Length: 384
Image (cartoon, rainbow, N blue to C red; front, side, top):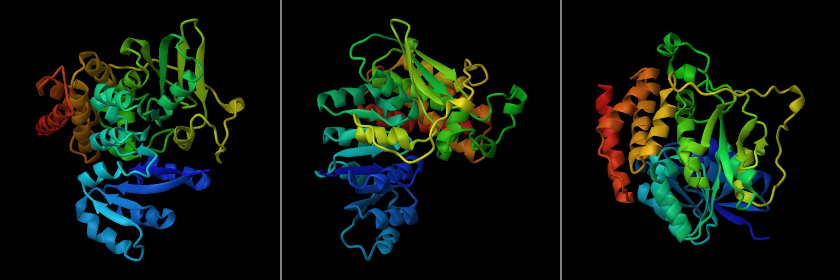
């Protein structure tokens, strides 16, 4: 059997490192063609030594010389740097699939190029569909490229839809742990810190996504992502707080039946399923036991966690509004982690940016790039 050649965009992050563990478990099926990172040059070099890819890319060009030094004794590995290199490497002929595990807006252009190069997309970068869902789905249809979701929730929805054909979906039930602040009062929320937020109760994720989970913006982004992945309007997407993170999401059909995918909180499962679909391969790890698990579900409180409501609003307005929300959120999220704004300021900054940024109902890739830059500047002004 020919090994599938994988390009991992963001190999040093949480998703990327777990994807490499999947490759370790199935060396007869998968081979790493390219690894990329933004700043973690030492870790990228270590990964390259283990997996011996054809190429590595460090997005931050300041680290290029250091990466070359670290891999000087491995001349078969080509070393590149910069954003353009990220966009170009995904087009390499040997690549079969691209795992987009970069965080934030930076994942958009490489994903567009990978689709145009007709590579299978394993999508972990939710911002790509948040920012440009209409563009991405149109390109995927035009180039006949499959997009396999890697988010645990969207993988669960995808798995629940397999075999259902054209059966009508009545509702998508998108689950959410609720984050670490679910039970806090308004007064307590005003004083929480980034360190508090980074202690997520059930998932091991990167810092940016963990903060987004605390504000519920991550779930708002997943609502937008679900709309584009599954062609279901926002009014048919319902968010459920499920603190145990066992039911990863579910689908309700026209006859009232509900299908769900359950499992322990382990991102390797949706990563591997995206790689191997429609096959299910063995995966080492903990197994779910329902005998000692309580399953609870609650409605989200959008008054105390307004980011979720702002995401729904941006989806309803359409055009470049989700792009505006994403850009403002990236600035506010980073500012909160740096102690430059409070937890409650995050939603305020996003909402004010939505009111001030230029709205376009018919956006192109160039529009999204311009919108992102404008919205980031406005959000920075809101910090002062």
